[in-house]
Image (cartoon, rainbow, N blue to C red; front, side, top):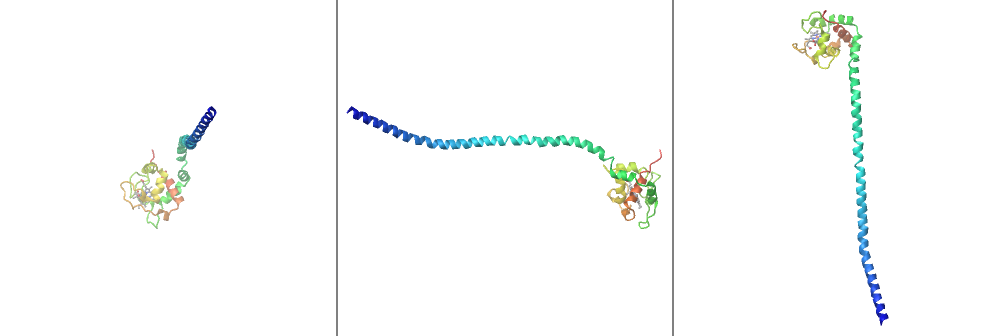
Length: 199
Ligand code: HEC
């Protein structure tokens, strides 16, 4: 009897162990796999994001720092070299002032005027138009940022762009380019720049 009872007891124990073993293992396996997959994907997301964000902050300061160092080195070297080498200044300095004087006094029958009809050259008084005496100095102050040479050229070619205070628009003929070439206008400007009061 004892043998039979022992055998039955062992059987029961074996069944319980088998039953527990089969019942317990599937419960543990299922959540484990999901948890591992989830945990892995979270680890991948977390690992990818921090490596991407640090790159833009380190790359953006570099391009902004480069132009900041380039600008101050270029700006001071350009400004002083442009003004003295203005091509119009050099061009007019090379022109024939004596021919300009002749052209200034010449009567243009198409227009019915000479420049000298309306402009004094030797006295500070105005005629129909303002005097040309000391015009080099005066012309440099007329339009802000405009050198005398350019102001004088514009005053002859487009006289209505700037009207001298106290004078009326439309009195000075605006069609001088019909009777004068550009080189002739440069000669006249070269002459006007010589009109300075004797000290
Ligand atoms: C019919 C009269 C008349 C004739 C001709 C004339 N001008 Fe004038 N000019 C004027 C008047 C008026 C002004 C002032 C109004 C203005 O700014 O346009 C003037 C202004 C000027 C100025 C600007 C002077 C200043 O103080 O800023 C210049 C330079 C000038 N004339 C040059 C000439 C030259 C060069 C010619 C010949 C090619 C000429 N003018 C022919 C009447 C004349």
